[in-house]
Image (cartoon, rainbow, N blue to C red):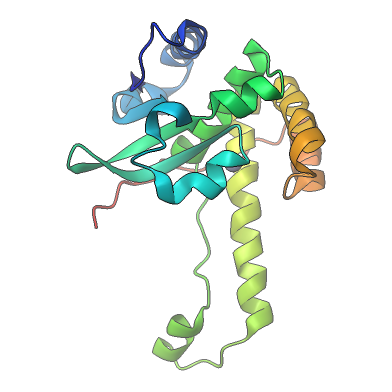
Length: 201
Ligand SMILES: [Zn+2]
């Protein structure tokens, strides 16, 4: 992972990233192949150029983007909100679980179903149905989280992921798909997805 923050300002995060790197570089073929394409930064460092992600960032511990324009090209990015994490007293293993989950979004992405939105229905001459559109949308969003969780579970971070989710709930209210996610983590569900492609605009 390429660190886009001042390591001197945040030695704790830097060390956490190094630990994850040491683990995955020995165990995950996809990480070996793609780690040099993944940038990791803090919300504090990135907020000026990622203002459109403010709503997400302010109520999350971290998030991942597969196509963020940076230095003229689209890149994979993981953004950690150190402030929200500190407020929630996130511990080192929970940081690792959070980063693993975000790596999961980038390296273990499910096959998304095509969402039958109005444009899709017009193109394919089918009647638009709000409920079926919503169903597919929810199914995609749920799978997106389950596959990301599964990546963290695969490398032994299921328990820390669960405690980080509880800390999230205490501050921000119950996270989306809470019951499904907890059940899947507790079942050690092994969901095998693929690397999310970078698609230039
Ligand atoms: Zn997620």
